Structure formats: structure tokens, C-alpha cells
Length: 252
Length: 176
Image (cartoon, each protein chain N blue to C red):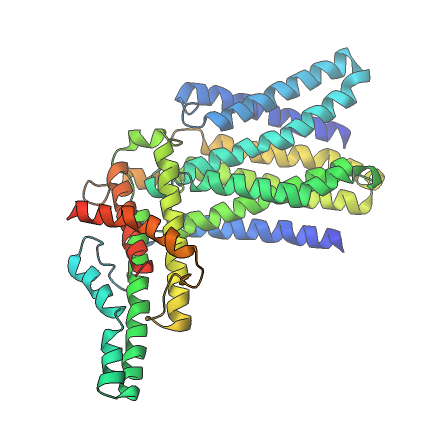
């Protein structure tokens, strides 16, 4: 189990390297800056952990857990990237995804995660609880983003769709694995935990590598004609007009 | 038990995501626009004048008080209520069409976090909240109910109202 876990981790690491190389070549870097900074962070984190494991094994556990905690927070960058990309072609709601992500993260962070941190002394597995709750919040954000994108008929495209699909698989496996680990106990579940977390990560990076292999234009941007599309200023004027007409009606 | 709930959450989430992903992919570009009723343009003056007629209570008052036809006035009010709801829904549909309108210049889309984008988002959310509120009031109390409650019984509110109305009046005069 131990070797299998290491092999899967190594596959994930190689895929991350491939993704970075491919991103640099096809210039996808510029379009998804937050996502690629997260991938570079993961790549560097794995590399430094590997070096620490061989050079200073006594500090490896602390280094691993610090890296793991930061990565839980860094994963929110992927969500911000996805939320920025979904409504990119719709000027009226371009920042809706980011606003939703920030609002849900802050709201649920205060109500759902903060109690775990504050009451960590009385809990048996505070870190596991924290990671599980953070994953549940990420799942909620993804589901909300999917729903809103569908409601507004936003075409995801291959790149953004792949980002969402890969991250959804990762988050779903994380929630299931962490909940099982919490219920069955770390001693019983540790070998499975050792394989399943790298597997979730490797699967996610595999989907990302396939979907981001080439820069695919957003379908809605591709199909815009000058008769149906408008520029931002015209949309802003129309929005103001709608609001003023409605305000007139309300003040009647 | 909690494990089962979390496992169910994970499975349900995956199914939901895959389902939504498949549906979003299979959408045709024009399919997302609802066409159950044609959404009129906000620039259509006649359509805006129609709202003044729908939400004007003078006809119903005239029927009920001057001609003494309370039943007819009630029937008129019910008809106007249906019209008001349809008008507000059409306004909402027209607004949704505007929100779903893609941008003509893709290069402009790169500047995603400008102040203008946040302002447009605020205008969108404001409109959505106001139109939902207006629909709720019309459905509950009818088209002739005040959409913004009157605070005239509060002594200081009259002063405030005057202060807020003055610039609005000045604006309306300057626009004419």
C-alpha cells in the first residue's frame, strides 16, 4: 500500500510537471494565472517535501502538515479561477462567480470551519475535521457555480469545463475518504487514506492535463456576432436604464 | 451515520456535477434564452407607457366610486393584477436577455476586475432584488398597493423625503 501510494503521488507529480510545461508552451498560463500558480505551488511543495524526506526526516511530518494546510487554502485559488472564467463573456455578471465564491467561503468559513478551529482542543482529529469541512465548502461552491452557470446559459468550454470536472472529482473523493477516515479511525483507515488521497489528486491533475492541453476558446465568445453581442459600455447603460425604470415604478 | 451522510453528499455531488456538466455541454447557444413570451425592449416607449396604465388605480376608483360598480371595479383590478404580473415578468425576461448577451470584443474580457464590472454586477443584483420584491407585492396585495411603504406618519420622514426628492426632480427637469 505504501509503495502504491508513493507511485501514485509520483504520477501526480509528473502530470503536474507536464501541465506546467504544456501551459508554458501553449500560453495557457496567461489565461489561467491563478490556476497555474496553484499548480506550481503543488509542484514545489511535492519537490521540497521529497527533499526534506531524504535530507531531514525528523522535520518531515511538520513540513508535510504545514504544506498540506496551506494547500487546503490554496485550493480556493482554483475555485476563484473557475469562478472568474465562467462568466467572462457576459459583461453584466462578469464578477458574479468571484462574488459568490468569496461570499460562500467567508460565510461558511465563519459558521462551519471557525467552530472546528476554536474547539480543536476537545476534538480527536481536528486537522481531519478541518480538511473535511473545507472540502464540503468547496463542493458547495462548485455546485452553486455549476447551477448559476447553467441558469445564465454560460457555455463552459473545454478548458473551464475540465477544470471544474477535475476539481469536482478531487473534492468528492476527498469528502468521502476523510469522512470514512474520521468514522473508522486513523489506525484502521490509514493504509486506504495513504492511497486514496494521492489517487484523487492524480485523477484531478489527469483531467486538467487533458482539458488544458490546448487553449480552447469559450464557445460563447466564438459564436458572437455583431448583431447579438454588445460591448460593456452599452450593457452598463442598459442596466442603468432598467434600474431607473424599475425605481420609477417603485416610487410611484 | 455521519460517514453515511458524508458519503451520500460526495456521491450526490458527483452525480449532480456530472449531470449539470452534461446538460451545460449539450446546450445550444440559443437554447438558454427563454422564449415562452417575447421580451420587449426597454427602449420601447409604448411598452413603458403600458405600465403607467396598468399600475394606475384611477380607472378602478372611477368605476367603484363615481359609477358605483364595485364588482366591475374588482374584476378590473383582478385583470390589472394579472397584467401587472405579466408586465413585471416580461421586464425580468428582457433583463435576463440583456444579462445573457455576450460581449462583442473578447479582448475586453481580460479586464475582469475593473470597478465597472463590479458596478454592473451591483446593478444586476439590485434589479433582481427589486423586481422580485415588486412581483411579491403585486401578487400579495395587487397592482394598486404602494410598492414602497409610506412613512408619512413619522414626523421627520417628510423632511427626509423632501431632501431625497429634490435632486430627483432636478434630474427629471434637466432630462426634459
